[in-house]
Length: 335
Image (cartoon, rainbow, N blue to C red; front, side, top):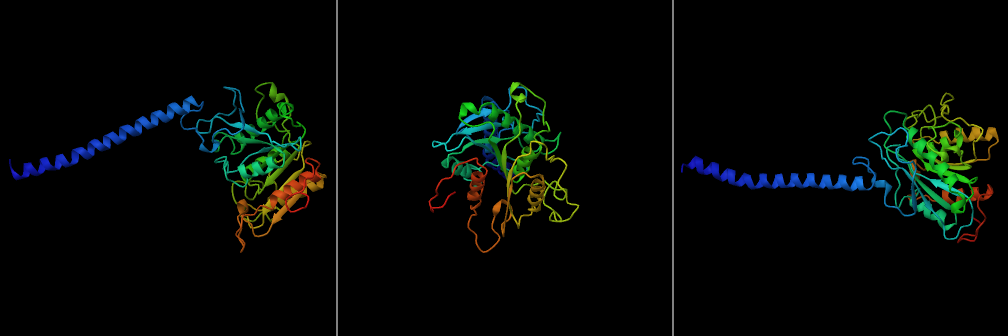
């Protein structure tokens, strides 16, 4: 054997095991992908549209749409939007709140420890208020405007809650809607534009109205002509920075609680201008703009503690609106 041939054989011997290992790894990746696809199909969603933020059911989870009747289906979106009922053990009111999350319409960002997600849900349940979580379709649709499929899901959610209100011990005339950021935008659509149909009826449930009776909008995005698709370049301060015509302020417009940080790049002027319009209409609403808080109420000042005082403000507003009763809190004051 020549020296060159011996070197070549050693080289092949050293490379072949690595090549075999790589082939095995590639095969296992294929098998894992196939297994994930099988699991996804078994769960009623197609591979590629699974949303990990949907999580596992904690309450009574109900699909929004009858099979094959969901409007504006797009393959890249999560295909199983739902509502989920949470009933308090010590119900103190027959009002009910539909609670959902923002995420720029790129995701419905429900977080198990999120201050505007599960933590707020649990806070409300402790006070005896029924909560219905809404998980709408994301990411943004490609064939219609960014909010349309989420708006369809929200209108359907209200109708489903209204249809099942009596069975769950709540009043179908006391339905609230709450969301933050992009879902704050969705909240205002539900509060101000419910007479605009987002989809054609698919069954008898859609004969019910989809208006909400009260709303809580936290730092809503995409409300003004300045900031239609993102942050407000001019702070929403100019006269020409107007409320977008998508918001109709129609005959079913309901009272709204607004909260916003004054350091938010999604300008608080959106909340200010919508509140001003509601005030002119005589719709009893409330506006809170908090100093030195950015988007998602992230503090910008010296105090870096999580800001939670807004919860008590919401509850006090609900008391004044006659939606919940008074209840003493740990500090001995009425909340």
